[in-house]
Every structure is written in C-alpha cells, then in structure tokens.
Image (cartoon, rainbow, N blue to C red; front, side, top):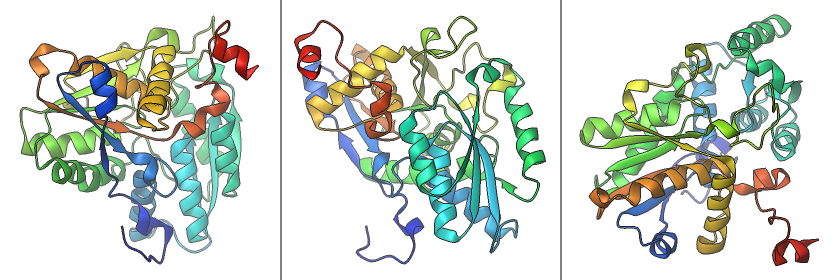
Length: 329
C-alpha cells in the first residue's frame, strides 16, 4: 500500500489473505481456510472494486463527466461504495434501497450525501421487481447514469483484473477452492474465471441463503443474510445477469442464525469483525474443509465486509436466557 495517494480510488484493492488458523484448529479442519479481507478497502467492502470499475468505465466512455449523477438499486454495500466514489469525484447519487437493509448501511449511504429511496420489501416478492425498479429509476432520473451493478460487464471484469490475480499471487497459485456469495455475481464470475483458467481443477463454491432466510408473504422481514441472493430455485429474472452460472461447481445453503454464529466465532476466535455474508461464506468453506478428501488443500473465502455494518441487525445479540444476555441487559 503506498504511503501517499492523490485520490480515494488509489486505495482500492490489494487486500490481504488472512489464514483463519485458530478457527480451523478449534474445529479440527484438515484444510486451511484463507479469508480475503475485503473490509480493508477504503470504503469498507468488496464493492469498492466494482463501484470504481463501473464509474471509471463510464468516464472513459464519456457517459459520466463534471456535474454528472448516478443512480442504481442496492442492498447497501455497492450503494455505499458508489456514494463515496461519487462524492470524491463531484457527482450526485441516488439509490433505491429495500427497507429491510440495516440502518447502519443506510446511515453510511446518507453520510456521503446520497439520496435514498426506500422500497418496501414486499415489492421484491414479484419476480419482475428488479426490472420494474430499473424502469422506475430511469424514469425518475433520466439525467443520471444508471450504473447497473447487476448487469454491467465492468463488474466481473474488475474482479478478473484484480481479485483473481491477487489471490493467485498471494497463494503462489496453490489455491484449490474459492468460496463466495452471489450479490451482484461479479466476484465469483470474474475471480473464479481467472483462477480456473490457471488452475482448471479449482472448484468454485457458492454460499447462498437457506429458505428460512428468504422473505415470503408469510414473513416479509426475516433475519436475512444481507446482500446475498438465493440462486438455486430462483426465477431466471431474479438471478443477477453478471453471475456466470457455469463457473459454480457447488451451492451450499446457510441459514441466517448459523451465519451470525460463524461471524461471532470469527470475532471471538480470530479478532475479526466479519459481516453476515462473510459468516455464511466461512461456514460454507468450513463444510468444504471438513470433508476428508479436502485434507491438506487450500480454500480461499471472500469476506465481503465488516460486522460493524450489521450491529443494529443483532449479529452479536446474545440468545435470551444466557448469562451473557443478562449481563448485556
């Protein structure tokens, strides 16, 4: 990392891998898990990479310039990153956000001066919801550049150019499994393709929310794994266009409470504040690492952000009736 930079975007990328050694020893895992610590990007998440890639691409193509504005749909992290980069480059920004997103993320988007349009979570039960919302954003903000994080090819392209090579270099090419979630689909599609081109036997594993973590008519506001889509059993129009389904070798479903428990374990065993999607991804990596055939192998887990963005969601709440809960109360 350079000691002096001229713009915020110069700080994006080159995040380290952290071996989750104590976590692995405590569970007797035969494979080692390396966490890609994306919270060390300047705005705090893996989405810093795609936000800058998308904005830079638009500028290079003459679609964004002085006095410009951007608009998109977001579950939080991409909106936060886009809002920060827009502020650093003098653009206005507006984001359509589901009203189930944590207040912590909404506060961060607001901090960078962006406009927030809240959308009721019930709206997203409609398989056509994303297309409808895209049309609404274009109609209400015709002057803005729609960054289109879910379908903009600059998204997976930046992961192919940065995240994949960083993992390859840090492991010396000794990586056997890549585990991540599908938010926009860009991380696994871009980094996974880069790594598979160089190591054809590498497996890509997707951590996805279990059915209990998905909003339904009966429960519009379940405790969710923020920013991660259910891919299996989803309608085609609900799957991000940037997700290359051919890159995935396996899907592992994780329920929210199990993801939260893994995030708590990482905090207490590794001193690492990892968000809800990170908890889900590490738990999926753990299930892969437990398999006897994976003994001695190296698993890289993409940890998208920090648990600080989910404190209000109760990620560290103690179960009722425990001594810890009594102490907090």
